[in-house]
Amino acid sequence: MFYLLGLGILCIAFLFIIGLYNLDFKYLFMISAPAEKITAAVIIIGILNCIISILFFFGVGYLREAVKAFMEKKIFQLKTVLYFKRSGIYLSSCATLGFISRSLAIIYLRVDNNGSGFGLGYSSLLIFMLICGLCFILISHVLKESVALKEENDLTI
Amino acid sequence: MSIYINLDKVLEDRDMKSHELAEKIGITRANLSILKTGKAKAVRFSTLEAICEVLDCQPGDILEYKAD
Image (cartoon, each protein chain N blue to C red):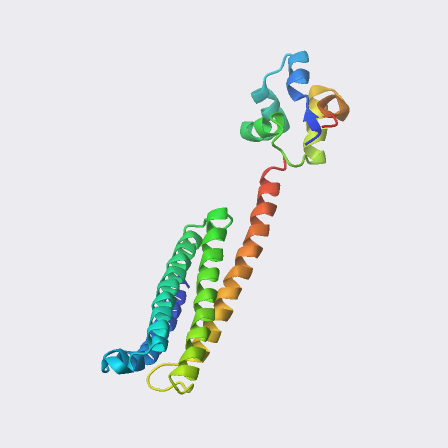
């Protein structure tokens, strides 16, 4: 079951990376364009995209730790709760910043909002990531309650 | 918590060791230690009944309420 889950996560990550590539491809052309075309908006959106990528990989990293803890049967531990919470916060922040970046790109760079090319539409990916992030935060809250219940059960003599 | 466990005192009065009590009431030494040190969050009636039966005492002899 874990292999299937891992394969699913890999597929999602692959699609996501293709989605990011679709977005950044246009910016790469803009940055490699003559100097007069590099406006403040391009730089700000570029920086935002860098932050988004960093947040995404932090989120995925913490998710990996959480899955690792699950596989080691360390489910009801505060460490696992923390991993899920951090993963959720990073992924939802990444999605929120992605929306801001995308909005800026549509307003200032006249980038079309339609997903094109290989992967899913970028906005769909952001919505998916936001939902995932919020679900992870929800799971972390549920796990926190479970940890408290388990502790109470363990300390009932 | 304001509930204190006087199990040590009762055990001393009965001249009984902790591990003997643990064996007689069928709980582990670790759990008895949790109970004695007051770290336990709850005590099952069945455990309390077994303790009272083995030590020939009342629940009030083991549990005590002191306002903080």
